[in-house]
Image (cartoon, rainbow, N blue to C red; front, side, top):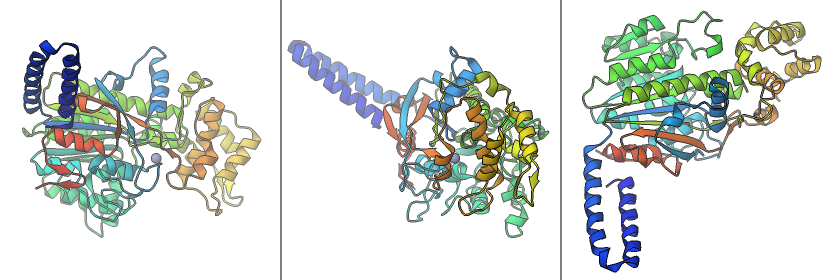
Length: 483
Ligand SMILES: [Zn+2]
């Protein structure tokens, strides 16, 4: 008996006791009815079991990101698809060694029901490799797919599909994804599969030799309906932010398109499947206080949730769980937020930084280029003092130049302030060595389909897969498939 039906039975029992106090004569009848209902409930639990589980993770997404997206996309009366799922819960996200988890430890807690240290993906605090929900489903004859618009080797998919001491071991993660024989892998990160990073071995060719179809852009992907084994790598590194698609003349698929093709592919297995879909760049946009891409990335994720719900509608064999691994930057839909201004921003801060002219001799960006680029793409006129501050903030305390994406975080904070968009102060982020600005704020879980009632109240991130395993009647202990 799973936990949900245990609590149903307990509720039934306490109901009987209360009724018994009020009216002893009818007590026995009530109890008889309750037992019958309990048996029926158990019958339902045996009949209706999720054969397929679709888990969707908005990286760094909590109430603030969702509200910003809702307001900018639909206005005050509008609603996100996520809000239409039947059941909801809150989730705590702390890791083994910090209240602010990174995506590796956060992903591992979700995928393998085990708290581990920040930085670890698919391994416990002592380095022991963990079996994840992906492995559990694979072991039971089901198909497995992992999708991310980050690299497929980054922390979240790695937590489901690999076991490494540190998330930075991305070529090793790519190798694990191959060895674990997952059926569908879609996202960025081609650079981790090429001979230069695989000790001279062509890992993509190894996938092809094992019967995988390999695709590299949107057109190739959309032609792969009903392919059973599929590897799609659409960018050497991260896939592009929504604002930057056209600026980079990109031919990448959307999260919706990747998910649709994955569902076609995985649903051919009559024994069912597990699919993890990550909206990864919500986190990246949040780090950069880039409210325009927080909106666009969260909305793309939300439309993908809508598509998945359409796919699952009317089925009696699928559970959909939508959640986040942690919150990033304390993003808030503040009273002062200028929605119109933010809608008009036409590039990510990362793209803007790439357009600026760096003066090697001075060791800073030329003031005029900072000013004109930010005016052109963000519609913001930075003051001389702000430009001087930006040029100061692109160095860390050791005097080293930050990486381009970290420079973009600094630029994004200036733009957010101009538009009255509420977010963690840049100095707090700069001092957040553990995570670069993650918070311990609780995140939402939404669930729909078979067994979704199991997701309620305040949960821990280690509860999620335990509940899925119980519902699917698969034998699983934290981090371990029971043979
Ligand atoms: Zn992050």
